[in-house]
Length: 419
Image 1 (cartoon, one colour):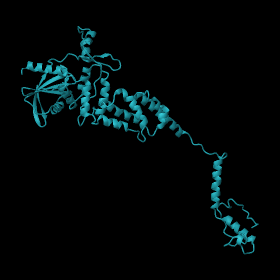
Image 2: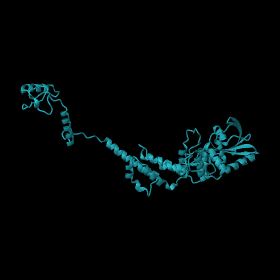
Image 3: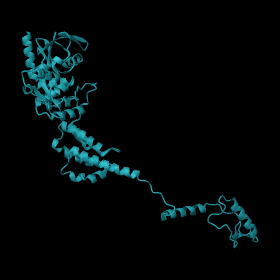
Image 4: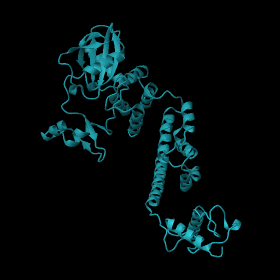
């Protein structure tokens, strides 16, 4: 195939796949290749940086690969020669490179907008061109530039060992979906998605575009969900959502966040419509609360079922109630314990003290001799001897002197002589 015909084929290929010509590079193999497109893309990504997608066609028994990059080809570091070799599954393959743009642009044609000010931020090359006295005015240069209103999406590859700058699929798709909702143009959404993807995830979109050239950004995300998302069906996710409940020592706000995460997956898989998520979330939150029922009463959430608040509003209400309950518990813990005064003893404390003294008195050791004659082995009620009060007094004095307190608690120190 002549070079002119090869360039025309590549440019038509770019227009069909909606790839900017300046960000594309055509690779022509020396023969027809038996290796899969995924294996070729993985080998090329190790040799050439910023590769986001690889498309494949066979012409005259020769393999042609169209490589798409996340920046201009002029800024991509390519092998020094027009040919280079890569190793795929132990086989060495030779490719010839063909740039679709002969001269690199003098300055970038894209103007990024700052997130805060939304003002055009022109790169250094453009500023240099303007300051050198270009024939075009500032407004004319900006009007010829294509404006992109969003920042780059975080990369995702779906590889078994992801890079350090990649997030898990569930986290990545949630963030990307929110960012793409701010972009009204579907073509721009598709472009930003392709820039963020790396092989093998980029190959999923390449295959989708081969089968459906007019696929939308939502169909891109649906294909990635099928390839890298959870394998649970909408019915299984719905059962899982309805079975969730608060775990022991789990804060209500944490339980609410777990419910919302499962509900997002359910929405992505088409198991529930977006207009019903607030009602479903509130109902399951009320059913699943097991350990902090007082929160439902204080927030009157059961009364809000007719007009359920959105997730962020509900989360704010729950967290505020948690903070108030925590503050009350802290105040109770910091309150000093009141000690009993010796002068003003409560009646219950006096009764307890009297009971304790009486109980201890009953357990004390009594004199083991007769109060009549002073002999041991019997008591006064059955004393057969003549009374001997002098001997009784002596024994009582000795008994009292042997006591650790010096006297009998609960009785008089002077013995009753009427015994």
